[in-house]
Length: 112
Image (tube, rainbow, N blue to C red; front, side, top):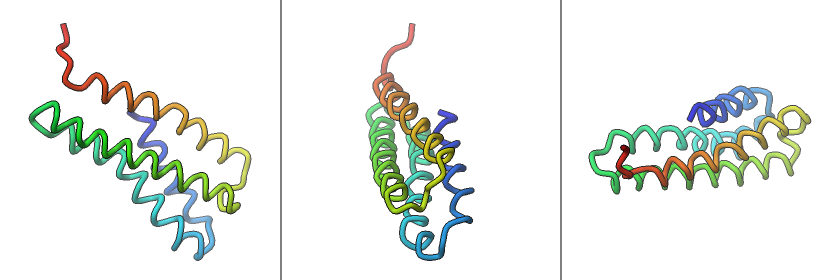
C-alpha cells in the first residue's frame, strides 16, 4: 500500500505552501485523515483475528473517504490549484480506493 503513504507525504509537503487560513481549516484536517489511512492499516495488521483486522481496515477506508472529501474542498477553494498537484492527487485517489477494497476483501481468506 505504498500509494497510501505517498498520499500522506504529498499533502504534508503541500501544506507548507498554503495560507494560514487554509492550514488551520483544511490543512490540519486533511493531514490527520490522510495519515489515518496508513495507521489504521498498521493497527489492523497487528490484530489477532481477521474480523478484528478487518474492522481497522474499514476505519482506513473511512479515512480515505474523508481525505477525498477534503481534497475536493481544497481544489474547489483553490488551495490546491496547480494542474500537476490536482492530477497527482486524482491519480492517488483513483488507485488507492480499489487497492484498499481488494485488501479488505482478501483479509481472512485462506491462502493455498
